[in-house]
Length: 514
Image (cartoon, rainbow, N blue to C red; front, side, top):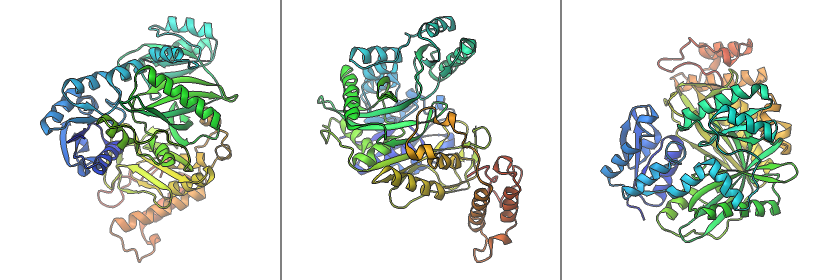
């Protein structure tokens, strides 16, 4: 087992890894940038080391600096979490060269599967169905020729990327040049490689992924599927496990396909194989993510596993503690809470969170690094927290999620919580009639004025008490509460919030939404 592990990440995933290490009795080392000095993962870890300025390129993406810190503190392994360096084959290779264990797949597997074109070819060679498309192309003219051969609509995707970046849906030849050019620019900015490829667009389809894990003894198992079809601009918002569209037979076929491609690259540790599923039940290989996924809690809650602990054990040379996990523990739904304003074109929201209250109760799990006073900056991803609800069936999990979202309070920045509540309570979501175009078809960005007024009053009451007010007095005696309630009731709503008003001393600005 490892003597000490450095966690090369931040926020809720760094805290999640630190907790897993503590469960295993392994000392942890957190790293932090200038703006993360007071973060939860820094305070919770056994040690914490400064690695650089706020700019991720000089801190969390600075592999050389992270390796220096790992050697200096005596760590013998590095856990990358997800994002940042998690799928960087060069960094994984540098860890091995420095005598450190990279808690993840081998550099060779990361490199092979990180090349989306090569991954498609390997999947096809392993007998997996793939969508009609192109090899890697380096110019708009090449891509246009492919689009004309496969037929519109098409998807243009970054060859070196993932996570929804560098992707464009193009419906006609007239819009191709501009959209493809923007995709190449985004791919260059995000991945340092402007190369793209073209795929025939299938619609309607579901986004289904299979969680696999392998050890160094040749064991690879599937832990079932996750439904990830609720997406906005190719970014996942809501995930669930299992999927209403996957039958036991289809689950077996998807799992076998995922294991075949994993074996093709001698894969070990955690990985996720992503598929598109048509209405007729046909599935197609999309890509393989060589890391822990943001949405791993829904799998953990329905399979009684701890994936972070298991990937640490596998990296330390252990054998998988199970042969095959069965989906026999009900249903789980996860929502991603992000600092974006759904009532103002989903613009990022930055500032100080003056109050955060997370939901609790039966079947609710929250992964976050929130605390009162945390500063949300523009330097990093907008993800604030993940809420997962579990129950014996889907409807029970859905209702628990509604309760959890209603309980969640974030004051100081706008969040997408109202947006998520409307999606979860939409008739098509309730019936399971979902696909990747769900949010394009349904406009769910408005709230009832009564609900807004009620929530404004609740938050005003919370702020009144927490800012030193006398809780025995009626809240309407507080000018802030009256102003906010009147402001919302008048129809101005959060998106034209009291941008210049201060609540108390040093309490920051009132939020656009909750």
